[in-house]
Image 1 (cartoon, rainbow, N blue to C red):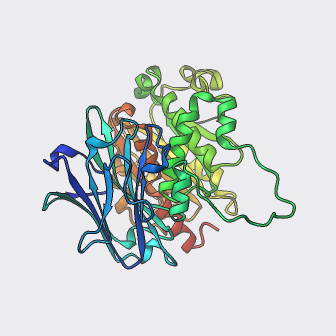
Image 2: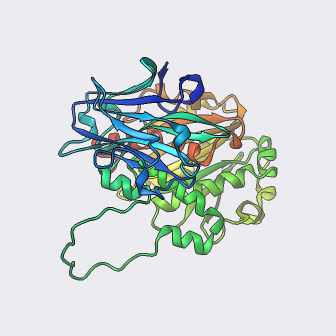
Image 3: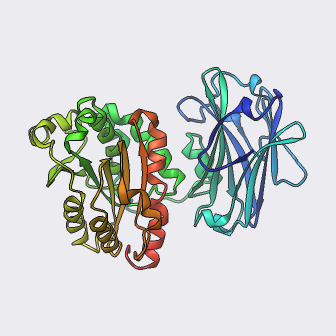
Length: 417
């Protein structure tokens, strides 16, 4: 079976044996390949379950690194031997020495069921940029069984950075003290824990997705645009829009040092709302400007609110780039006007991520990848019938899928400094 990035497959659909192999081949750069055994919180809580060149097997012998002809590295897996505390296996590759993943010519991960190639996930260097590590595939528990997910995401830093990312410790040589160190800033997670503890787990999941895309240190302004037309009533009433706001705020906090999320609602007219913060996020939609029942209900006019967003972020071209998450339940019909605005805003440091929620007829939004006349590709689109169809991790991954490519292109064109 040929697997594509982001695909998830029940493991029994691929293999018949309780013992199988995972093999990794990378051409063009020298890499070390490792397997992280993580707990249910995604943490390397037991460092004996990091399998790499210096520790080639786990205590239970459920994971063992082996040599396989024609591959950089291989692993023999007997999942039944793993303790129940190991919930996820993440296979990674980290560059050993100079180089970046863009120099990778070809790569593949192959799952062997005995001598049979049960599944192959292929990728190439043009999928990446300056990253020095890759998260390749994951095996994770689902109910009573295991599933396989193809990740294929770049990660800044090498193996040491990955160990720290997953909660492990790296022994380092002592460094001389730095004179006059900058004052320490209260960590994001600490602030969320103090002011909005119900968002803490979301903040941690957002951190993982940012790391996959190499965006941990990216600074950006973040805006959320919410469809408030009459057809959205059930989404507001059932709490789906508040849930979406809860999920977007931690991402904004990671990006934006001012600790707030710019928010607009729209029906026939754009309706600027107060910035969302950790202090007002609880019940935000029931209180902002008198609550959503006060300002929703008309027909949808996307161009007007897009104009307001462009005017807001485009007037300061030297400011950090803007990431705009735009939510619509469809009925989009002003295609010509929207196209013109997307072409115009491509000259500004603004990226648009459109999300269709529970609707249909998304018009030009579904054709953004083929939209011509833009300096750079400045927008993306995905749709879900119900927000609960996506886990928080899946939502963050989709939200960030095209943003890094836009950042690179916008920097090349001088749009982002």
